[in-house]
Image (cartoon, rainbow, N blue to C red; front, side, top):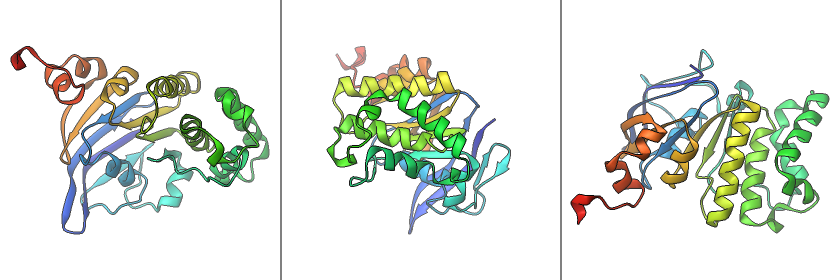
Length: 244
């Protein structure tokens, strides 16, 4: 098992946001966490990356190591990379400079860095075409590609994506998710995906978790969740016969 969250609790002040959740991600999988706004999806990723405090009996195991209390800047070194919600690229830096920032933990590995840069630019040809442009001149879809490409520059074992479809046109979303699948299949990179667009998330993932008000309420193969009438009604916007 590459990643395990055991009994993870997170609070912001007096408000408990995660109520002892359990999640497992096997090596080579794409796993998605779906749920409504405010369900605790982004908080789950922040808990893994050390950006929020966990309650004492919470446990996060990655690659056989307990990383519950490892500092955020050390998490990347362990092999976890996050493409954050809202992209958060550096708007005044060029595409190349943004990518270089993603590889800061590999400063001493010039050969490995150049190999990864070549690989990433082959995977994202549009970024290669715009390598000298600043981040702010890119379209929303290109900025999202840059955020994912930057996260890949550290050659993570686990790539975490927070709401990659936000604010993008449907065709662009399709492109982005095709690339996510390609990263997983061609590079063997394990992916943990948080996404409000449940339909495309479940179509892309191997397995899924449904997070509701800080609790995991369902877990199954993505295809089974996609065909579950309760999920279809609550998250895929489909009517069931009982509504008629």
